[in-house]
Amino acid sequence: MNGLRARLGRPTSRGVVVWASVFALACGLFAASFGTWLAWLGSRPLDHRELAAAVEQLYPGEQVRDLDREDPSAVFLIYGSPLGSRSAGDLLLGDGGEYSFAGLGASFDRLPAGTQPATLAQLRERLRAAGWDLGEPVYSHSYDCVAESPQCDPASIPSDITLSARRGDNLLEVHLNGAGTTPVMDLAMTRATPWTAYPAGLLAFLLGTAGGWLLFGSVSRRAGLGPLTKVAFGLAMFLWWAPILLAAPQLLAHHLREPHFRWHPLWEWLGQPTMSLPFLVGWLVLMLAGGLTALPFRRPVRQAVA
Image (tube, rainbow, N blue to C red; front, side):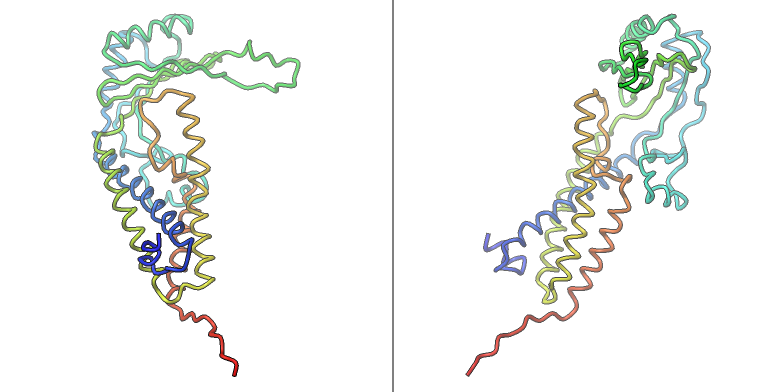
């Protein structure tokens, strides 16, 4: 431990290794999310013809209400458009959750088999016959009611059913609406996680962690590491880690509660880009802290009393 503190330039400090580890781990996680994002950009583009063929294979001759007939313009979209300078306000002001995977959709005005349970059974049978791997159906209430109200009877609330399937790198999610509104069946096709995302994320994590450790050590060895710098660094780490500690447990509970063929991307586990404003402010505070290290900082020297 003494050797690590000496390499970080603070041999007498007991907390420097902890702070360096916190900073390096955060750098590694953000670097890994960027690496997986780059891998996603190289994934195979969606093809609207594949969705049309899948729908026709599942329900030949059925009248489709809506069917996307154009390929998405990007791998990720925000409010239906690729990320651009006009999206900066959405990302920084709380709408970053709208930045998500592009998809292709289709819908039916009526259930092909007549009733929801019959449609679900028929759908699962046809998906298996077409070579799709199926997940377990997820049931949820079509609407909520006030629990204290005497008119509220949870047992009488119709259920929405979501069924996920995978074939190759295609993911198909079918939603059956139980509330009686139209459309009553929606299909959405997206891409599975490319295999390159895993080695890219691991390599970026290792490089980011090592780079963060070396950067912290370089800055901490400067003579100007004063109280104001420490406060700025602590604030920056709070702004970085608070979104992670909020988002990660929620996503973990979500994945344990519902089966997924594709886990949410790493950046969503870090609270990004929904909470990108705290991340950006944290970067600015770190730059301020780095600038403060260049200022002269001298500790008072005790005078010997004759």
